[in-house]
Every structure is written in C-alpha cells, then in structure tokens.
Amino acid sequence: MERNNPTEWIKELKIALINRDEDKLKLLSKRELPSFNSLEEREEALSIINQTIKFLSAQKRETLKKMNSLKKVKKISNPYQNNFHSSFSKKG
Image (cartoon, rainbow, N blue to C red; front, side, top):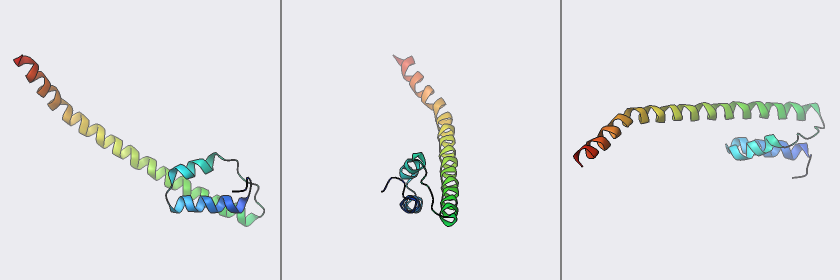
C-alpha cells in the first residue's frame, strides 16, 4: 500500500472489517490517517471507522463476558479442588 493513499487505506479497512480481522484493524488504526481527497472519502472513512469501533467494542464485551463466566466456573470448582487435595494430604 502506498503510504498515504486514502483509497487503499479505506479498501484495506473495509476488507479487515468484513473479515473481522482484529489484528489488521488494530494495525490500520495505528497508522497515520491519509489525507483524504474529497468529502466523500472522509465520510466513507468515518463510517467504516465507526463500524470498526462498534465491532471492536462488541468483541471486547464478548471477551469480558467469557472471562467473567470462566471466573464463575473457577470459583465454583475451586472449593472442590481444595477439598480433593486436602483429603489426600490428610491420609499421608
């Protein structure tokens, strides 16, 4: 990709969003924004950026839900693990 080619940048951002490629989206977000040639390019870029923010925010919420579920499972299973280990140590 040419360094500040707005058309290519928008295209790459669209493809990354369609493919749900979080790594590519993050990489593109860290690059310097290109100088857009028209209002249409700016509006298109803004729209895709907003969609990207929504997607990444949803991914973050989903990850947090999964983490909380794992924490709950760990809390529930932890007493059993402690009892299991302590019952073996008492017999020795």
